[in-house]
Amino acid sequence: MYIIIIGCGRVGAQLSQLLQKEGHNIVVVDQKKSAFDRLGKRFNGLTIGGDGSDLAILKEAGIEKADALVVVTDSDKSNIMIAQIGQKIFKVPKAIARIYEPDLAEVYRGFGLNIISGTMLIAARIRDHIIESHLSSYLTESGSLGVLDIPVSSKLEGKKVGEVNVPGEFLVVTLRKNDHPVIPSLDSILEKGSFILGVVRIKSLRQVKKKLGVE
Image 1 (cartoon, one colour):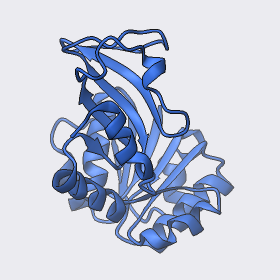
Image 2: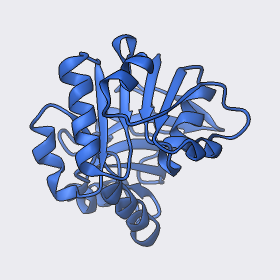
Image 3: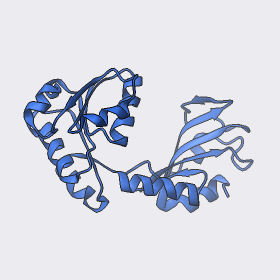
């Protein structure tokens, strides 16, 4: 994919490095050329010094052929504006903006933008470390869904995946044994020594944990 990232702070730099390792073509734009130092010597994508809201800069970055535009500057207003430019004017298939005010996330989503709130994600990750070792609650921005990664208990051993799923509340998506993940069918049998990776509705967490035999 051809991906343009506006903003080369810590998030922008790490995202650029990650996507490049996966084989994508990356262009990074930042007003401060010194910010590109964060990318490291191994980064071989294109860097452009300039204002990401400037149409000429966006065209230089190749926005007319971009598959995705990610805007992660330190300004919510700039991030939303640039993402809208990419989406509305240049018809970029995926326009993603990071904002700092999670309360405004739903408002901006109403404009059809993909919104990531760093505040919400960080808060969810901290919560995960404090409250629940088996649960990752940052699957969705609203925190309504989480991921449970748990060992197959004696209570579940021998049961079928279909017997463990709870419609609308919990869904097994992967079984893992000896570091070998597989996508199960409803008839897959839960074996001792295996681990379940499933999506859970946070509001139903207590009931689901009780059914799964998780403390």
